Length: 131
Length: 349
Image 1 (cartoon, chains in turn orange, cyan):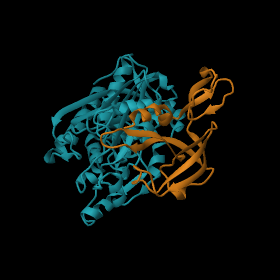
Image 2 (cartoon, each protein chain N blue to C red):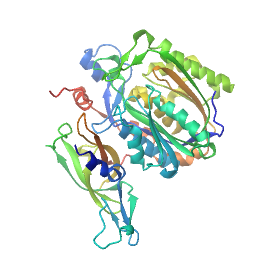
Image 3 (cartoon, rainbow over the protein chains, first blue to last red):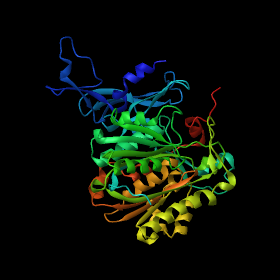
Image 4 (tube, rainbow over the protein chains, first blue to last red):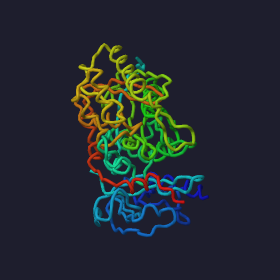
């Protein structure tokens, strides 16, 4: 049971909440603890737009436990328009639908069903832009 | 009829339909050797990572994008469905969290078979109309269950409609009045812990769908002093292709009035989403000053009817989010084997 671990990440996973530096404007995703000696107040929570470009992708043909029913499924690295590079599953698409550099958008989907007596885990994935 | 003290309307609206479809003929191939008629052409199928919560999130994001209000101003996120992923644990909290509405928000799940979403809509009208809140989100969403080979399997599909209710003066369409008609009618039910619903045979049709819808619709038109001809468009709950067309005809509505919102032939019965997605598709084409009549239906049974008037603001707001057509167009057909795997109909041993 890892309910707490999943729960702790809900803002980042459900709605791409990251951090922005109040002075430099730098955006980080996922959020990180402040550096030693750094004032934690300089980082404010910010929700990212979810829009970005496909930086790279691959197709998983042997999935980890819990993903057997999904294979083959694409995974990718997405360069978000705010700057961060995020690794995520790609959904609503097949390998043939994908090309490096194409526009993608974030959707919130089921990431994992941890079992009948356990929680459903939700989080961000990316798909080719709808329109 | 019921009208809030403070006039209310739709500030934003949003639809969602999964990209996968199964042809009704493909289901017939498995169970009837392709013989006999089918009630729709195809139905939408949720992808393997989709459920009522994820459908609701995307529909609600579309509604918020159209509304252009900040999420902090939304005081309720209410999700109507008969396929909430948890029996105990609200879908509403997860949807509200994904929208960024938490923690100062009311979240709840509504249940009334296929009209769970319109129950949420009427409640949201009251919350806003009483002045308790400025904006409230009402969502109808389902990933409907059906027993393999059952007649329902041809139509039970997936989709969501989200409506953000707010003050009439800010709306893309005002909600002028509503009525709700219910009666204890055992036409369709699913007992606790059972995987699939069943039909109460003779109760389907006349005493259920037709009686409740006609009662609600006629009462609202009568109270408003209007007839079918006074409305530009009409939407009815759509469990198949025939019923909504038949009830529209009985009530005096023409084929062209119901055409923009009649989606069941393409996507099946999205249950709590059905009338609401039909409303979204109608709002996608409606012009300022036009009027919309919508009647939902939920087994058990009951109907809610609403009369809406479209405002000038529709023109600027409707293109802020994908039109319903964008979801209807992106269809990827799957066969029965893939469908059975994704819907969880395979027993893995």
